[in-house]
Length: 109
Image (cartoon, rainbow, N blue to C red; front, side, top):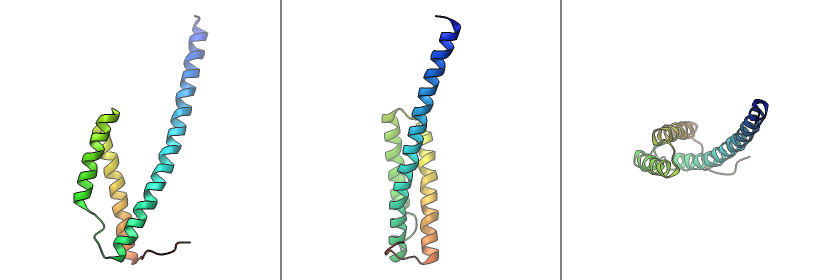
């Protein structure tokens, strides 16, 4: 095999990996959007019932669960924990905003 053929094959492999990454990025974005639709509903429900925006016990259980899943998926558990902590902090921020705005659940435009 010539150097040019090796480079072409490597470029084809690289292109295939990048296309897969692009598809997975789209899946991640749409999955996060769906997740946040549910957490927004939780935030409105908490605001209606004057519940605290965070639930440390549940958050702890979820972090442990995600670490287990990360091990099973051969993903760095520390990365998975940081990722979930980031998501949780964003969700809490949204819940706090619902409380501050006194939003109640109901029909949305």
